[in-house]
Length: 239
Image 1 (cartoon, rainbow, N blue to C red):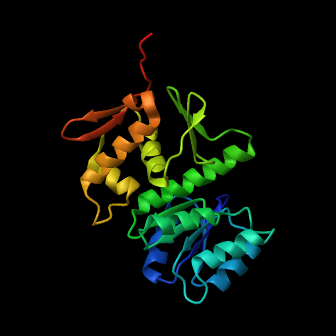
Image 2: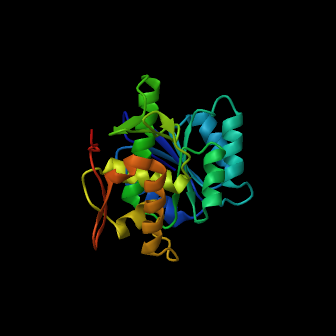
Image 3: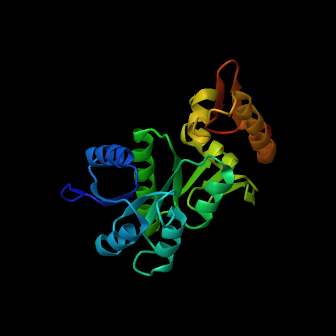
């Protein structure tokens, strides 16, 4: 299947669930992308080599060849190694997400997902790639905190922090919306993908750990009582 839009970047959607494919294709095509689809790993690799898409939306659980095996072969082939990959997975365990990112995925999204978030993540990945090719560093600075999105590195006054993937995603979410209050429920949906077994107190625990690791810069994360958290645009320090 091929849904085309003249002049648009091509996305390859790989999933064996027709309903998921139809949902993803509809929203990506509506957003202006050209779309190709595949329902198994072998076809995905063939189409990737033939069409050279800008990005592949790749399901983890595929028949025969898993998404991780497809990803490994993509990265091992010189003609496809630079294609961006957004992994779709029904697995919510952090270890599975880390494995996907470590294998070369650019991002991941757990099922069920918001189609609007999927489109946003696709655009963000393509934007990061365009910036990297143009030599523009994909970094965000908030006060003394410097966040390198592409390298998944955070420094405070030049000192690198050891953050978990969840802590990094939490900081990114707050930083991208700095100055605006983020409810605990919204943070759960964005950082933890609204897993049903995750409680709002998990947000509080991770915020506290993140504040501790940020040191003095942790004061920039403000608690909005009864609602959630906000990251100040800048940190005021006493002389």
